[in-house]
Image (cartoon, rainbow, N blue to C red; front, side, top):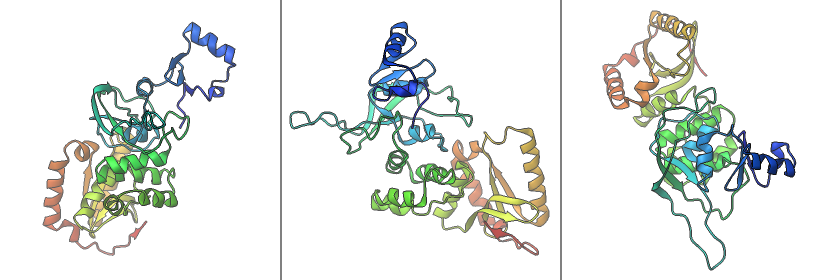
Length: 311
């Protein structure tokens, strides 16, 4: 993946300048050298900081740059680089794991692509690929590498959130998913075998996987006549809508959501609307309340003249 304002020394054509012009820009300070890269002032500082350490962002940080949903995990900056050195005389390999001596800013993006501010410096989390050379000359490794690192590093639900985002955005094909799963250890492959391509948001994926892990009947993106699609339908009559703080800051959207909720209740459905904060910041308390509602049996209430169809 290319990043605006960053060019590998072997691909300077993307700056659209001659070699002499580039050298002049370096002398004048309009472009600077960072490891194997030439960097313009508009290049994102968080990415440049990782490149300056001889690494490239991957896992959740690479996923954020690829425009995928990412859970709010910011305890480390996830990076990788191939084996260090070649030949018999130098076989030093960079070990996987956290390096507390090197710190950087987690790479996160808002929905409009802007850098998410207020992130604190955290250690680097090195991933250990078996590659001896970089797969390409791009600042961000290929999607397949990013997703494999996610699947091997993150929790199952966190990895599923990112993988389902790649499927929903059609960046990952079903055959690509099969290749990804084949490359994973057996336990991870089994756990991630039920990812879907129609998830509407990371919050929806997280909540759905919680229900499925408890073998509770839940369906995604169900169409209810007179209402339209709902995020989740638990049992016969419990609708759960999973808000994202990025989507629901708009007044018109807020009013539309409440109108839909009223129609659903009129039809006999129980409606629960979960915020991004409830799912990702206060999940233990949220899960406990969902468990209480489920045990009460609200999902078993019959809906008169039920006429929905699963998407």
